[in-house]
Length: 61
Image (tube, rainbow, N blue to C red; front, side, top):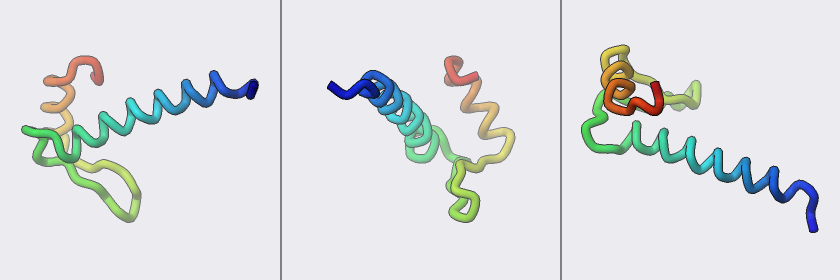
């Protein structure tokens, strides 16, 4: 058995969780104002959009 298997499984779970959060920001309902910056490879938004998202998703704030 691969010794690193538990570590790899944990890493995969974390990546899936993070991907779900980003996907929700970019394409979830009521999340206008978010976008993707191709050059910097990151989610971008105005402060108003971030504050609104954080207030409606308490687990992320």
